[in-house]
Amino acid sequence: MLLEQYFPPPDIVTSLQPEELSIPLLRCLLHAPDSELNLGNFVRSEEFDRYAPKEPDVVRKLTAEAWVWLETHLMIAPDFRQGSWGWFFVTERGKALAASGDLQKYERSNELSSASLDPSLASKVYPLFVRGDYDTSVFQAFKEVEVRVRIASGLSDEDYGVPLVRKAFNPENGPLTDNTQIQSEREATANLFAGSIGLFKNPASHRDVDLTDPQECADLVYLANQLLRMVERHATARKAGS
Image 1 (cartoon, rainbow, N blue to C red):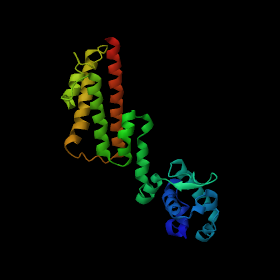
Image 2 (cartoon, rainbow, N blue to C red):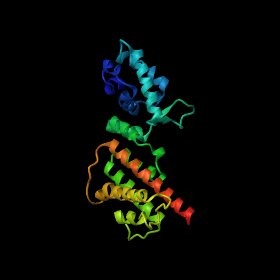
Image 3 (cartoon, rainbow, N blue to C red):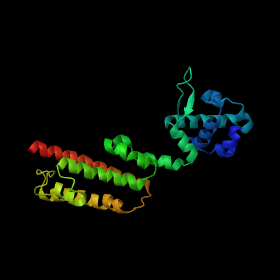
Image 4 (cartoon, rainbow, N blue to C red):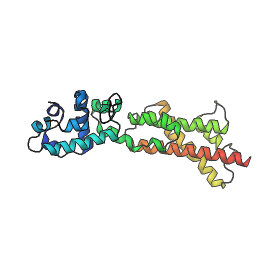
């Protein structure tokens, strides 16, 4: 019986939230026959009566909620091979979650929204973050800032790191300096970029910085995202003034 094999005892199931029941349900679906990869067929199965004889319909309801959670988070998807809708298959994302059993890791990935990121960060950094590779995701985010500064400022490949951004945002004559800002703001902008590259990009170039907090990592990626916006804004301002 799949439920007995993969679900916790019924009294535990009744205390779980839909997302907490999702991993046991995923494992059931991975081993269920194709005829049961349909919500109606699955929850109407007589197996629920044998698994939870005291309150089978309560477990059915909770299972249906967990099924909807899986569908909402793309762990399962409609099976296009079937002749009608209502049939599902377990996606690669679902298989990965079922194999790892690390629901917290998946939930932590939601602390960073790819939709709010610069396209380069969304494609290069977000996948690293979701996999839990926090060191590399932060390094890659600030490397993108460095690359974008170099391109926008027209400086050469020989310019890199803190000297690059200091030159690009030099308060007196930097190619990305916004001369409509007062002196102290121009200096603050140069310090912001230099400090960010020096603190969050350069150390990871030379050693493992051992970032383990997903919220801290997300905050740093969002900082890099803001710096990229500033690069574009400063570049646009310089072009308009030239």
